[in-house]
Every structure is written in structure tokens, then in C-alpha cells.
Length: 66
Image 1: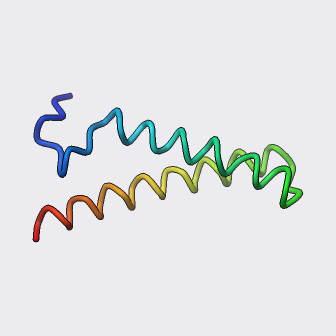
Image 2: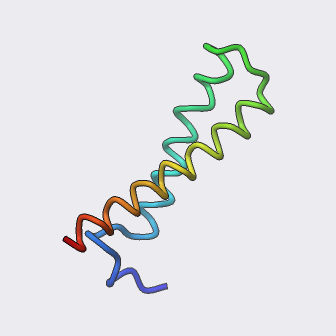
């Protein structure tokens, strides 16, 4: 996949990095601080990290559009 036409320099590697970073941050917080079991924490953390990366991508596209 060619990332040269990605909006605002947002590459595939950056999106994957954002998903992984958000997952690593949110999962322990959900499990240790909020008391969820690890299965719930992984599922919610994974879904939340994908939503965060999608939001960042859409925000970058909107900023580039005008």
C-alpha cells in the first residue's frame, strides 16, 4: 500500500502505532483501576483503540479538506 497520498502525513504505520499505543494504555487502566476482568479489558481496549485511530484519521482528512 502506498502511503504517499495519505492525508496530512498520516501513514499506515502511524495508524497501527496509534491503535497499539491506545490499546496498551487503556487495557491496564480498565483491568487494574476499574476492576474489569482481563477479557473485558482487552475487548473494550481493542474497540476503543480502533475508534480512536479512526477518529484521528477522519480529523486529519477534514483538516486537509479545508
